[in-house]
Amino acid sequence: MGPGEVMSKDAQQLGFDDWLEQALRANAREHLSVYLPDDGFTARVVNRLPQPALPAWRRPFVMLLWMVVAGAVLAALPMWFDDVFRNAAAFIVGQRFRLSDLAMLLTALGAVSWGALFFAARAD
Image (cartoon, rainbow, N blue to C red; front, top):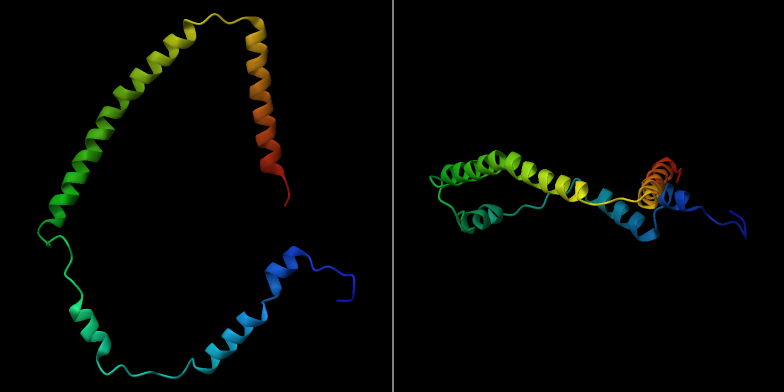
């Protein structure tokens, strides 16, 4: 690269590591095959770890409880949806719309749709 040339952002991200990362990788390659014996240290540490918070016999009970809660939410969801939908429909039907309100609504929906289309189709 000559003077005055600027490296593109893609070239910096894709192919060029900084000097510190290259040094760390070279050091890791040197010590890859070296084994460090721990003389049972790992096994002692694992044996001293605290036991799990829930005993083994309570885990299935907790899972069953969460499944019951999820089932209750799924059973109540259609009623909640129906209630929200009916109230929203009553609110919308109860309003008086002028032609200018409808035109503004269609303009806003069109702007959002075109903005989303251009955002999705952009080439970065």
